[in-house]
Image (cartoon, rainbow, N blue to C red):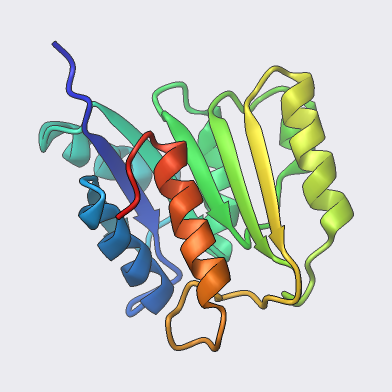
Length: 175
């Protein structure tokens, strides 16, 4: 029988990455396995995914922040990825429009992040749905990039909501 345990490959912006560490702690409390990597290439992600499967994960998600979020989006093309969570990543609209992305996507954005274009985020989600890919896009108005870092300011409500949504996306109970 396949394991119901969820695993997350966390694409960190670098080390240390307080936002990534906060997510890892929240996912661990919810019962998920995590493995952080600063390498964002497909080979490194596949190796991390294999490690999580060997440790008992029944399904593996890829989650990234910032540049890691942009890289995470592209992992949705891999049929072995259960889903992708991208936080403040640049959405690959052309990839979605071409139907290359298959895994479900949860995209979370700080609406006040430098360079954030809501129209691009919404076009990405629409393109995914047009190809029958589950997609949820959440924009936290007046919240900057990096809002998951507990030291980033008073964005506790956005942090709490994002962590809840990530856990729910993977079928975990948020604690």
